[in-house]
Image (cartoon, helix red, strand yellow):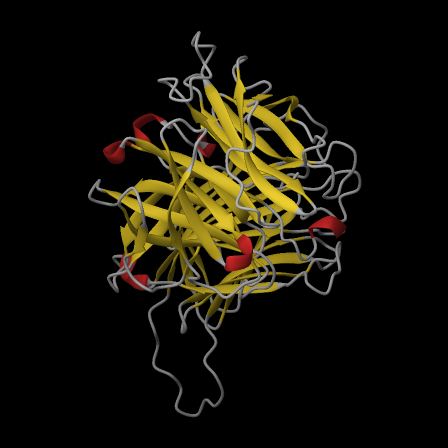
Length: 479
């Protein structure tokens, strides 16, 4: 599996379609796989929804509810009126297709006059459609790949599309623009802001693929960014093709991303399967202390899966000390920690060399492997280090990542918060009140069965430490 597709809430259940090869664990013969959920966490596999056909592979796209039958394709109000728009891909052409479901999204029947949008390009893909109420029309964002831009098209019936505008090139220089998503997200005041997500591959500063985003205005015709700031959704390497759910209650903005990177995704050491999705993440916009709007991503609903292993407060970890905590094997684990760096002491005038004041939290084992997350207090930066795991070696499998922490968000500037999830080969990190997010695939040779806390150079007060196991949410053998 790779890109999430067709994310829609039909009023009863959430649909997750995705890029899928039913015959092998690499990208070919792509169709739309399908899963459904009532909580975005517990998923049930469904039959293939959109097959590969002689007209091309079923590449990425979206699903919307055509409540008022604007397409004229639901004369009897069949089920939930789910319409899908996606790319049919041939070696010499990509074009946009429309299909409808009369059985609540289980399968789709293609519109007889497809394609509904074809500009004669080899690389023209990944449509995402929203309804723009002020101008009473559907708006499609779609990647015009070779031109390094996003095209916006308008329609009143989902069948006939008119060009509106272009956005780009913008942000990171890259080879491919892919998987645009346009959505309104609430800021701290409750106001809705337009956000355009654009995935790029290759061109990430970390290497390979990444999703960038732009905050701005959309008037029904053109998207205008509010500034020229470059923003990415993740500071690690394995969150790509971010997609958002449509028809969410109360206009909640929720995304999910494919956990993978095109530099190495087809060579991962996971045997007969490859590909996973991130946790679903609720999104909001927050103004940072420098005056820039930023994306906040919070794991959605995970608290319902928790079983406490350890909960403690106000523990001190002295300088040059270490503490180990046993972790259950074969369980998904969540760690939530908030810590405060000890107050600065007068530096010994006879001391020479750099000042090292660091905290490290490591998932480890007795074979010496460790997955490390840490905080460098003098520079106020966090790191994620998977380089000391020995289960996968690849020239593009970058080991170390870092991000700055803005301490102005805390009442005490010496504070840091971390929220970590480890589930098999999937690792997610949230920090700085969920302003910083890192998603990484991890492959230890042996299970990581202990949590190791280390203070180097100074002490740290662990204001709170919570460790939970998380319920299994799919009826599959644990890998």
